Image 1 (tube, helix red, strand yellow):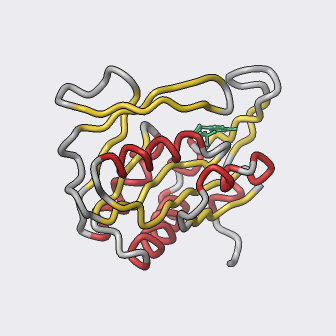
Image 2 (tube, rainbow, N blue to C red):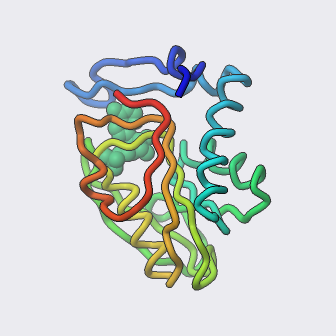
Amino acid sequence: MPELLAERLIRDVPDFPKPGIMFKDVAPVLQNPAALQEVVDHIAEDAKGQGAEVVVGIESRGFVFGVPVALQLGVPFAMTRKLGKLPFDRITEEYALEYGTNTVEMHVDAIDPGQRAYIIDDLLATGGTAAAAARLVERLNAHVCGMGFMVELTFLEGRKNLLGYPIRALIKY
Ligand code: AMP
C-alpha cells in the first residue's frame, strides 16, 4: 500500500501519559482533511468488504474515525463508552490498557442480535480495549465481522488478544 498522508502527520509525544510511553498523537491527522479522508476511505473499504451492518466506535478517538465510516457505509453507529457515561440500560466489560486498567460499556440496544459489527479505534496497542469491545458485541448476540485501526503498535502484539478476528491496520510501527 502506498504511504498514507497520515503516516507523516502522526506525532510522537514521549513520556505521555506516563514515563516510558511513546504516545501517538493523531490530532495533526484530524487537522488535515485530505489525510483524514484517506484514512476513513481505507477503513470504510475494509468494513464494507467484511459486510459490516453496524460500526462500533471505541471512545473517544474511535468515534472520530468510526462515525464517518458508518455514514459512508450508510449503517448505524454504536458507541462503546468509558464507565459511567451511558445513561440507559447497559452492559460492562473491564480490560487492561497499555497504561492502567479501564472499563467499557455499551447500551443494551446499541446493536441488534445477529448483526455484523465492525469495531473501530484509532490505535491498536495491547488489544485489550478492542477485545473488551468484542466481548460487549458478542454478549449482545451479535457477530464481530472485523476491526479497523489507523495505527498498530506491532511490538505490543495486540493481535494475540484478538485471535480469530479479521484486523485491518493502516500504519504499523
Ligand atoms: P490497547 O487496549 O492496549 O490496545 O490500547 C488501545 C487504546 O489506548 C486506544 O484507544 C488508543 O487510543 C490508546 N493507546 C494505547 N497506547 C497508545 C499510544 N502509545 N499512543 C496513543 N494512544 C494509545
